Image 1 (cartoon, rainbow, N blue to C red):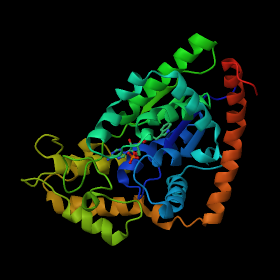
Image 2 (image 1 turned 120 degrees about the vertical axis):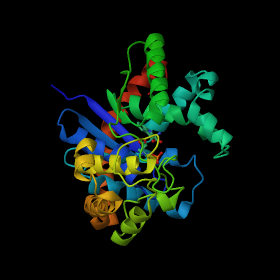
Image 3 (image 1 turned 135 degrees about the vertical axis):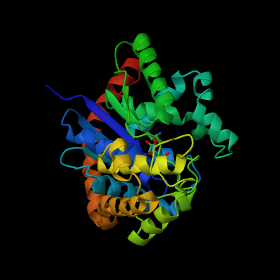
Image 4 (image 1 turned 90 degrees about the horizontal axis):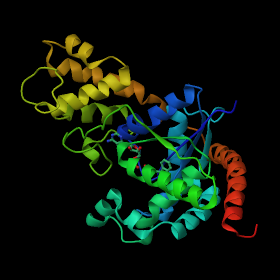
Length: 324
Ligand code: AMP
Ligand code: TRP
């Protein structure tokens, strides 16, 4: 029997960091290696145009995500890796969804409202972005979509779009299910009240950071008053965040880590964490696949994705009464 299709994407918007690894990439690899799914992982370059960007950096940002996919363990022999804009059917389908979705449904998206408030963009794409995301998923008949919490509302909208289309034009799309990542939010090292993000570079461990950078950032990470290595998200947010990172990278449960460092203070804990992070991120520092090889891998992935996409868009156009 054919395995169910699983799809997810990451936007190429600059340097990837430990939050992206623990919140997305690491989970993608585990799902791939479970052998239960036919996995598609793409680079959402069209989505990334809705955020201020520099055209001279875009292609290297796209290749950097491809390279991070490989370094994290996504294997092009097991999964299909491709670039969104190289399979134009998703934008065709997005247009169709634009024409069939009530304005109110996109206007109430939390991310849209937040980005508008923060003046992160004023272009139409900011509003219609979830329709392209719905197209990315529905085009491939994906059953599962691993995402972070922030994307759940967009996925719910994709389900609604599928349902409405099926009701009006006959069964066409599968309603996709979200697979939430296990890892909670990774917080900034120097401000554990905020999410680790590239906009706070001092508290952000980039996947490309040198060993020295990793050491400096972890040594300077805020810990809390007292000296006990103990999980207490309310009163010891800094240490708790470091414990979560330690647990996610080592697989050792926090309770065991607390015992291990009991009475030892923060010093030894941080030294060990530096080593763990340095070792875990080694594949990212050492990933040196040439641009030519990355591009040829992406072209092969796009060809494979295109096979599904071109069949599906034909079916959709026919249901709508368009000529093929
Ligand atoms: P973004 O940087 O928002 O494009 O995120 C790409 C992916 O990484 C999404 O699946 C996010 O949920 C995840 N991600 C980003 N930052 C973090 C973080 N600090 N902790 C956990 N996951 C994150
Ligand atoms: N919107 C997602 C993000 O910002 C990226 C994305 C685009 C995506 N299309 C998708 C994720 C389809 C999952 C499925 O993280």
